[in-house]
Length: 396
Ligand SMILES: [Zn+2]
Image 1: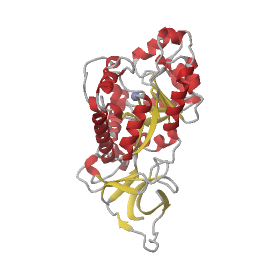
Image 2: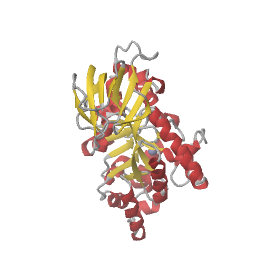
Image 3: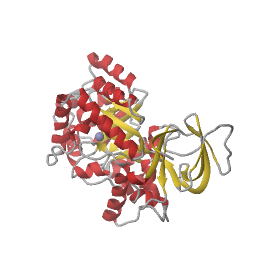
Image 4: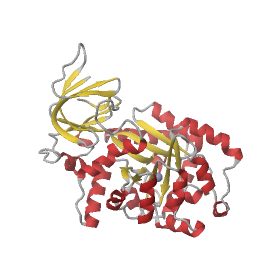
C-alpha cells in the first residue's frame, strides 16, 4: 500500500514533514520518502490534507472493570479498587462473563475510535480473567499487551515474615504466565520481598503499581520500614505505574535501575491523589509513558489525558512544558518502555497510526502540530485509524 502526499510526524523525535510518501508492506512501514511510485498493482491513496501520527499506546489500563463506570464515586481509593476488599473486586465476581465481555468489547472499540492502537492491560481474575480478555481481543482489531496476575495476596504478618511464594501455586502461576505477555503486580503492600523476587525471575514483561497514594506509601514504611518504591523494585520491573507520591530519592533509584514509569494523571486526580511531578521525573532521567488506568474511574481517551497533563502541570508549576514531550509519552515512549516495535512511524516499525484531518474545524489552521494534537484534536478530528497496516476505523 502506498500513502501519497501526506504530512507526518516521523521517527523517535516526531519530526514534522509536510509532504511525503509512505509505503506499507507486510504490516510494517517499509519506505518513507517523497516521490515513491506504486509498484505494479499496489493500491495507492492520495492523502493530501491528512496528518499521519503514530497510534497511541495506552500504557496502563484495567478494562475488565468497564462495567463499573463511576460507581462509588465518593469512597476512598481502597474502598473502590483495593484488589482484595475493594468494590471493584466484588462487582467483577458477581457479574456474568457475558456482561463483562460485552462492556470490555465496548471499551476496545471506544479506544480504537480515539486512535489508541495498543493498550497495556493489568488483568485481574487469574487465568480465567486472561482467557476472557483474549476472547474479546479475538473479536476486536486492537493490539493488546496482557499483564496477568494470579489472585494471591499476602497480609502484613506474612509480608513482615517475608513468607515465600507457596509451592502449591507454582503450576497455576506458570500456566498463567504462558498465556500472558508478562506480569502486572498489584503492589508491594500485598507481596513479600521474597514473592516479588520470585516474580522477578520470569523472562516476560514485569510491571507493578507503586506509590499511587499517600496511604500506600505510608503503609509500606509502617509495615516494613522500607519505601514502597524500593520494595517494588525487588520485582526488577520493566516499568513502575504511577509514582505520584514517590520521594525524590525513590525517583532517582527508579531512574537508575529501570527508567520506565507509566503515569496516569487523570486517574490519580479522580481519586483526589494529586498529579505526578513530570518535570522532576524527567530531570531524574525517567522515561515517561501515559496510561488511562481503570475504566471504572476514568475514560480510556489519550487526547483527554494529554490535554489534562499538559495544562494541569503548567497550571500548578507555572512553567512551560513542550507539548511534543507530552505527545511522546502517548506514543514513542510507550513503545520504548515495552521494548516493542510500536509507537513510531519509521522504516521497519509496525504500521500502527492515526490519520488526522488537518482541515477539521478544530485544527485548521495548524500552526503547531504538537500543540494542536495535545489540546485540540479529538475523536472527531480522526479520519482513520490503522493497526498493523490495516485500516480498522474510518476511511482514507
Ligand atoms: Zn492500575
